[in-house]
Length: 215
Picture 1 (cartoon, rainbow, N blue to C red):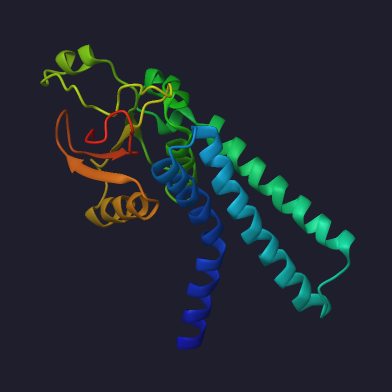
Picture 2 (picture 1 turned 30 degrees about the vertical axis):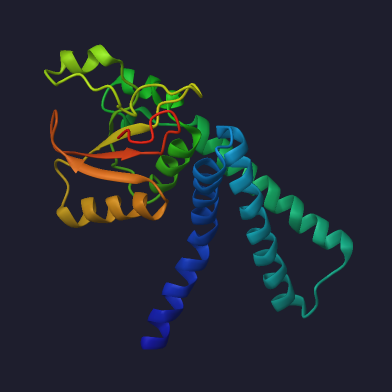
């Protein structure tokens, strides 16, 4: 029984590793090298591509007992590239209205930094009840909500043209779920903050080089 449990854990970790590598890699290139959003995603994608090629080569070796020809290696690389490109395209541009608090929030989805969009699309495979309550904001939006105007909010669009923060609903969910959700975003290298404001929610943000101390 113990062996089965560890086998399941190991299998799950191997399956989720490429997604972690993709997002964490992109966060690394963004935070440490200040790459353009698309270039940061490409950087994370290249590392993920290498991981997938290793996976496919390992499975191929287990099945056939050999590494395979140059042509078979090219096919594995091509398949890995298609998976990475397809996954990124889905995460960057597809977002269901059922996961947005309002239609206006749904429309704001593409205004979020691409890394944040990938982090959202990935967790939606596990938690399809996640609700995005806020994304891009303007300074006057805080006054409309009865809050003090913030000068360093990462909800504002930064110089790269994207907002670096979004909010997720926590109301109506268990503390275990909310804690795991916060842990997921933290594991991906993002900043997490649970606070009230206009209601209990989880605030997720990506470092901005325009506002290093922004939240």
